[in-house]
Length: 69
Ligand SMILES: [Zn+2]
Image 1: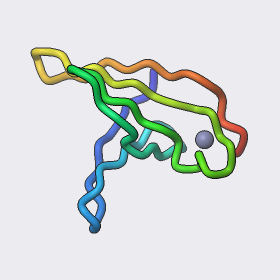
Image 2 (image 1 turned 180 degrees about the horizontal axis):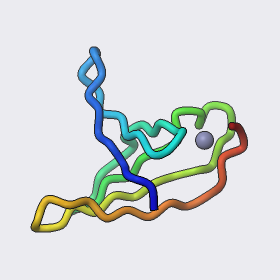
Image 3 (image 1 turned 45 degrees about the vertical axis):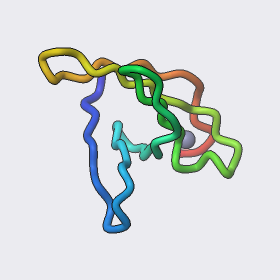
Protein backbone atom coordinates (compact mmCIF):
# COMPACT_ATOMS: atom_id res chain seq x y z
CA UNK A 1 0.00 0.00 0.00
CA UNK A 2 1.14 3.52 -0.66
CA UNK A 3 1.64 6.01 2.11
CA UNK A 4 -1.08 8.52 2.67
CA UNK A 5 -0.42 12.04 3.75
CA UNK A 6 -2.73 14.62 5.27
CA UNK A 7 -2.25 18.17 4.10
CA UNK A 8 -3.98 21.32 5.21
CA UNK A 9 -4.64 23.78 2.42
CA UNK A 10 -4.34 27.55 2.69
CA UNK A 11 -8.12 27.67 2.86
CA UNK A 12 -8.07 25.46 5.94
CA UNK A 13 -9.45 22.40 4.22
CA UNK A 14 -7.97 18.99 4.71
CA UNK A 15 -6.79 17.01 1.73
CA UNK A 16 -5.35 13.57 1.54
CA UNK A 17 -2.56 12.60 -0.76
CA UNK A 18 -2.23 8.99 -1.82
CA UNK A 19 0.18 8.17 -4.59
CA UNK A 20 -0.56 10.43 -7.52
CA UNK A 21 -4.00 11.38 -6.34
CA UNK A 22 -5.58 13.91 -4.09
CA UNK A 23 -8.74 13.40 -2.09
CA UNK A 24 -11.12 15.81 -0.45
CA UNK A 25 -12.74 15.19 2.89
CA UNK A 26 -16.30 14.18 2.24
CA UNK A 27 -17.81 13.02 5.51
CA UNK A 28 -16.92 11.39 8.77
CA UNK A 29 -18.74 8.87 10.85
CA UNK A 30 -17.47 7.67 14.22
CA UNK A 31 -13.75 7.04 13.76
CA UNK A 32 -13.93 6.82 10.00
CA UNK A 33 -13.35 9.60 7.50
CA UNK A 34 -14.62 9.36 3.97
CA UNK A 35 -12.62 11.01 1.22
CA UNK A 36 -13.54 11.49 -2.41
CA UNK A 37 -11.17 12.00 -5.29
CA UNK A 38 -10.45 15.64 -6.07
CA UNK A 39 -11.69 14.89 -9.59
CA UNK A 40 -15.10 13.74 -8.37
CA UNK A 41 -16.73 16.47 -10.44
CA UNK A 42 -15.40 14.68 -13.49
CA UNK A 43 -17.27 11.56 -12.44
CA UNK A 44 -14.27 9.89 -10.83
CA UNK A 45 -15.60 7.24 -8.49
CA UNK A 46 -12.46 6.56 -6.47
CA UNK A 47 -12.88 6.90 -2.72
CA UNK A 48 -10.79 6.33 0.37
CA UNK A 49 -11.99 5.55 3.85
CA UNK A 50 -9.49 6.17 6.62
CA UNK A 51 -9.84 4.63 10.00
CA UNK A 52 -7.90 6.16 12.86
CA UNK A 53 -6.40 3.69 15.30
CA UNK A 54 -5.33 4.18 18.89
CA UNK A 55 -1.64 4.34 18.08
CA UNK A 56 -2.23 7.25 15.70
CA UNK A 57 -1.64 5.26 12.55
CA UNK A 58 -4.30 5.44 9.92
CA UNK A 59 -5.53 2.36 8.17
CA UNK A 60 -7.28 2.96 4.93
CA UNK A 61 -9.26 1.28 2.23
CA UNK A 62 -9.55 2.38 -1.36
CA UNK A 63 -12.65 1.74 -3.38
CA UNK A 64 -13.31 2.51 -6.99
CA UNK A 65 -10.96 3.21 -9.83
CA UNK A 66 -9.78 6.56 -11.10
CA UNK A 67 -11.06 7.51 -14.52
CA UNK A 68 -8.05 9.75 -15.12
CA UNK A 69 -4.29 9.76 -14.62
ZN1 LIG B 1 -9.70 10.11 -9.26
